[in-house]
Amino acid sequence: MARAHALHILVSTQAEAQDLKKQLAAGKKFGDLARKHSLCPSAKNGGDLGEFGRGQMVPAFDKVVFGKPTLEVHGPVKTKFGWHLIKVLSRG
Image 1: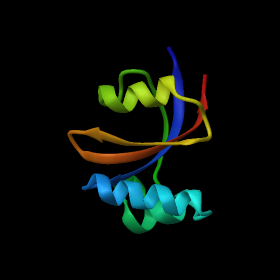
Image 2: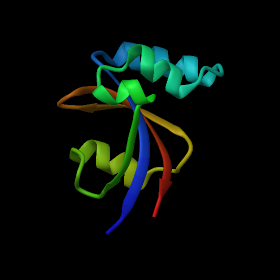
Image 3: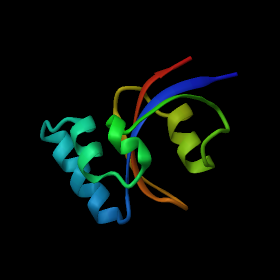
């Protein structure tokens, strides 16, 4: 089964996600922004979701994690939980 290791930041609005993406592009650290802004319990770990298999996350999230290039920030991605910025660390 395909597996991936990803980080994410979950916020409630698209505008907030876009603002955080700009901060990342300007050199801010993903983990620091996740700890400060993410609504997900993974925030305490810098947004680290650990390793998970295909199909364990909601479809829109899965599509990015298993279909987009690694080590880039993707999003904002809308799910039933809110808006995500996603960074895939590895996939295998």
